[in-house]
Image (cartoon, rainbow, N blue to C red; front, side, top):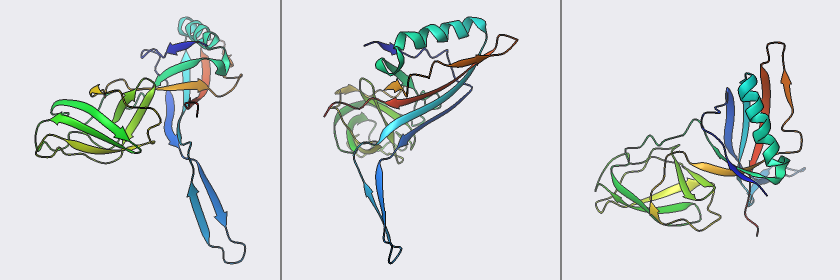
Length: 200
């Protein structure tokens, strides 16, 4: 199985990068009352569009061929969130995490806006999580941070990583390397990827 890192200079013309929830919906045929149940398995999904000239198109062909379809894994960034917008005041550390919460320390005491909603945190290799509300540090320089999706792997304790966070993903199917080239040798790629979930 091949593991590759997506190059930051191969930036898509358009992208969707989002957390696809996993729910089950029940609707009563008698009353119309609706119940929604949250299931495990929420994951990152990416859709990316590229238009590249001959040199980069050949490079992308080779890159996708090396993945061997959905067999290989690619560590993919969200190009909208390559760095955090929060102040990160101090020397923040990732101490622990369970469920949908991370425990951080090392911020400047009482600093406001150390993380902002939408920032990404790398919690372990191939696992990135979104901060879901603005975060201030407390008087001890600590913060409890709600995230999505929930943690699936133990966190890597140490310096907080918020730059170039990457998600371990795989191509959706065997047709993702398909592309269309016009008479100017401009090639279009439409990629769909899903997060690789750990074995249970």
